[in-house]
Image 1 (cartoon, rainbow, N blue to C red):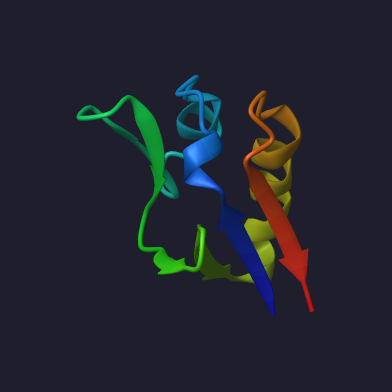
Image 2 (cartoon, helix red, strand yellow):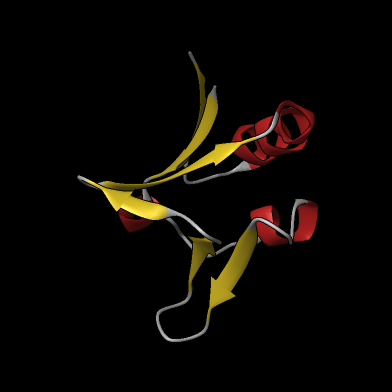
Length: 75
């Protein structure tokens, strides 16, 4: 099982995630931060379980994020 964790309060709104994986990420025009589409709030982050074929693209998103607010965790 692989999950994306998005620590939204650390997001700087660069939207690199939206450019790389728009089916997972969306710019929130109200506050200028990105949202993880379909995610659920879990404590201080948002979380979404993803399929194996979606992992690599989201690892790229996490690596390029200048706010370092995206993590990919596999259990």
